[in-house]
Length: 235
Ligand code: 5RP
Image 1 (cartoon, rainbow, N blue to C red):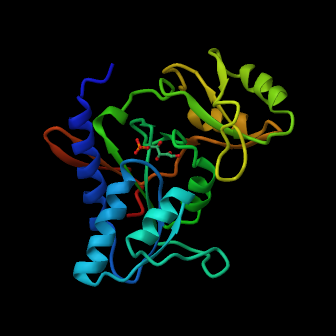
Image 2 (cartoon, rainbow, N blue to C red; image 1 turned 45 degrees about the horizontal axis):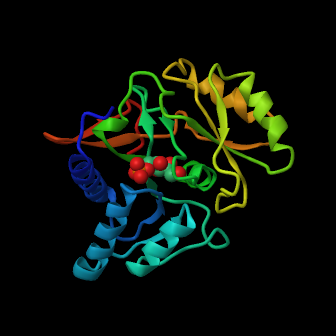
């Protein structure tokens, strides 16, 4: 059970989401993540555009993020005109001491990975409940092709000691694909190998393990905000 109340968690999300905006400067093209923490980043960027004249543009990682970003007055780019982003700000469901992540609780993992891989740096916004020693307590989201998803599920099960569940019979990502949530338990000791093994299964579109991708975690805890930087951080 989480040691934090819902109010404490919401306050931490707001603090992390807003603090990450310190990395954003006029002239930048940014990736905009998805989720209830990044929501505060989008609201803060909108405020800076309106009140401080901040000039940025962005690529969203989900339809929901696109709608909120447009509502907040953030100019949107698309991949026809953009081949590089200065940085991306995104949330995570878990991060470990090496800043490897589980993402995709909100179902946007494929677009989030495309955006992260196209960015000059990745900033993760997280509250203290997301920090773990070993990944896997949060069920690992895996986006799969609808064709033969039952067989893809069996093949994922052969790598996973726990259960693998279809995220709702009618659930589809923004890309029209189902998601399988794999219950590994807190024992993904080699996330780099696991990401590679899962991606090697035909039918797997993308895996919610983001290894060697994040540079900085903006971590909000009840006592305040902390920046955790990887030794090789690009930002
Ligand atoms: C969506 C994600 C989110 O970043 C992740 O689920 C964290 O979301 P939240 O900030 O709402 O806890 O990966 O696909």
